Length: 439
Image 1 (tube, rainbow, N blue to C red):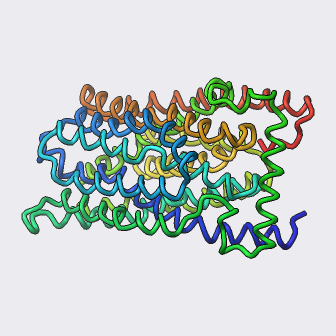
Image 2: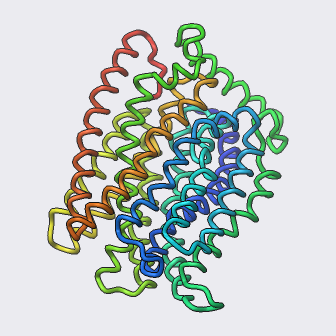
Image 3: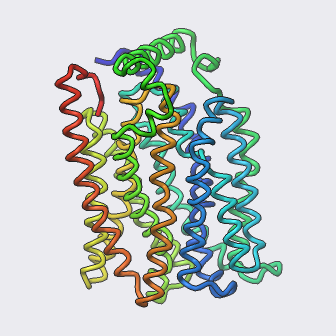
């Protein structure tokens, strides 16, 4: 039974933090994936093959994964406000500079730099929200934050298509205008983040005293409950977070999810363009799966919170994404294939909503920053593997089908393993007397 002060406080915190963080993540995501639209012109101009493009898309995730954990630990040490502002400025500057590469190797370098600049933002925000949002509300809060991804597709797809149409204006190619126009806003957004965010609820002067007191006490009680579930010293070490079997399983599922998502993201515009559509029309067609994801993420997050269940929700969404992608490759009917790809894209994003509510239910506050970053860092390597693998297979076979089929089957197997193993662990935990876990 929720109290009036609980509902009022959580609502006020969500309205204060989530819309701004969503805006930041829209630009983050846009600068990460606008490569998929730039490729419609850039590949030919720079002489990139399908394998070259897949490598360039994937290189982002190498430096991103390598610096993920250090970045999140620095965020926890120096405070979210300053570190998040630094990350935003860095990726904006690099994304804008990508407009001026003049060859494959220069573009590889910019993708590596972009991954380094952006490293730590996504897991950093997830960790940051655990400092503000009580556990019972985290799935729906993550769902609201993560709708920035489909919003990017809804808004960014059409905008990117129109920016490509500026080809030749001012002596710049359309893909160059795309990188400049979509990169500069992040540079301007960084100083505002420094002003707007606070590190912890104790600094939240915008919260009335009674609500601030309730929030601080509630979060402290949850922290103490988690800390008492582990042996002294064990849960507070970074090594424990990195070697925790649940962390490893989560990283494997997230790796599968990232493979599914990035296979679709980085190649969908090229697949749609092969239907003979203009770049402007491609932008609108690609936006449709994002509309489905937008509704699905909100509903799936609320359902997970209402059922107080995370593992099944995360596993089922990833399984559905893999199954839908598999169907889209095996069925010849274009309409069915289009619907299946849309479902696959939406389901990959729905998976993340309950998924990121799991770490805070078993990691202590001191290991949560490293644990969340470890899951993200290990899993996000799929962002390198999938585009490079699909691009290479496409170069060898002439189509995307085989690469997508392999990634889809892998997703089915991993989803099933994750659900079976984690469900058994959950039941064992409950039998040991820790029924309070929101798994």
